[in-house]
Length: 354
Image (cartoon, rainbow, N blue to C red):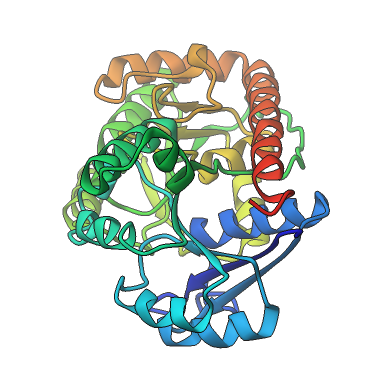
């Protein structure tokens, strides 16, 4: 039987019609799921995506679409709910898809309990979008359930991210007396904003330009308040030198891409990532990027820096500043290769109704 896939996401707790899209999400999680949904449909696999208020709405969506597979994006459905859902829909296969590496997951206080409880239900599969996390979750659940190797492979699967291959080119403007550097993404400790801000200031000083450091201060997550407070304090203290931090509220995807296109360089030298859609958004708009090669699977090592070493980050900023087109071309080629492989993995799993 051919697969019919249904992605289900939970609407943001802080949903506001003014800030967010009409479906309730303007986040990387929604964008990620929408990319996968479109990819499956392009591959000839029927797929739908729905955003719900809470787990009490899941049954209604299954009755509407009659899927063979339901993909729950991230950890939000309480495990006990599946005792009810599996009785109502015994033939449905459920995939709980994780979007984080273990260092980030450590900040989700219920994660290990929930993953263990999920694994006790039949027809629940854990989908992971990063190889290291795949190994760790497989080890944990194999030991917890005393699974065989084959059972583990069937119950913990690799489902990497996809990104649409819609790329643009951009000429670097060396004539400005300012430099616009984007360090987008939710404000949280593992995003490493403060060190990157120091590096950006040093870089701008050496160029003799005024820095405009762009962040998404509208989303403060996982004890991110001290981070944004330090960023504000840093730029307030050096305001007279002409450097400034610009806070952007989260915005719908097309508007965010337009914002990305106005940047000179993007920074994503983060401590923990599985894919990094924000970095892909910058690259897609022709903006050179420096990042962390150990964390972003499609990144180019020559344009990556040690996230704890501000001098190394400055060196890579200069490299990208002098060779922006090389940076963008290499990253776009690498991202294409990665997403082509993603399509193959998803097609192989779902086309035969796995």
